[in-house]
Image (cartoon, rainbow, N blue to C red; front, top):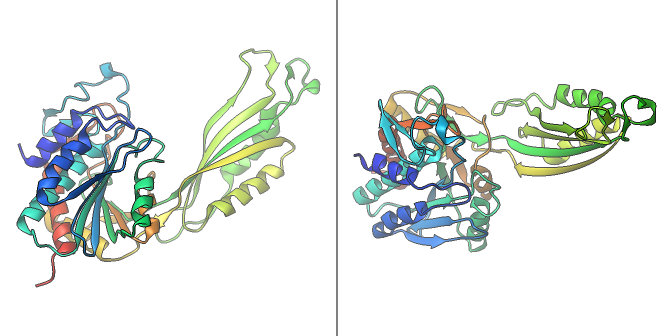
Length: 378
């Protein structure tokens, strides 16, 4: 098998459900150390993080990713054992094949090939790998970046192998992500009998129009790099379990994916303004998952676009859509951050898979990016 396919299969075989790493990072470290990478472990609260660096000079190019995967769901729904890599009709099946053990394997094998061919490359090459990207993401990349910053290690470029492609490999590169802000709302009413509504206060009736106002609010128009901010109610709960009781409270959870046109303070103020128009009491708390970030231009974008054009003969589009990634923890340090990986059609799904040709092409693209960024012009 091709080294990338072989490594991807070995990673899939390890059931690394968040925050478990299941030996994935040790497998990678064993491959990197003979190439001159100095491997360090930043483990905390059950999360395993690997920082492996080769070289001490700048610029520092970091290849980042995660070994943890989401649960499989019902095993009987899979056509294959999700933790036994299976090849059928040109596809490698298994949990994490696309998100993101396939991309991670290609990053590793590309680095191996690059270092073997160019042992005296300029700058430094590093890996930052966590087992807590799919989970709370508190003790993973965010924490490692804090430790690196504290000791003066500065990442110049960061390439993540997240699944960014859509219809075909390389058609989309993520050069930023929207911010994510979640609100936890509790509307306070008064419990009572449904036959005597005048003695109670139904919290849903009280806040329904206000919730509709939040849904219909135009938060911004977006900009050249970001779509308009979106508001989505993710959870709504009320009730006592009886059909003749007006509940005393309602709980709602909502999320805003916001552009660089807004910040958390502005969003919170506007939400409070809308809620205050309603005739009800409420409690509200917030959780910020990440700020929006953007790499608008620079050497990393140019190298990635050129590599895709050379290997695949197509020009990728730049996008900031989709969910969050660990790039949100690295971009605030001033690094150029880019995500480029396999198709995302089956991520988090039953029968997750990645094309064998994709693995080979990703390997070639990543190796070409390394050459463009870490070889001196001749």
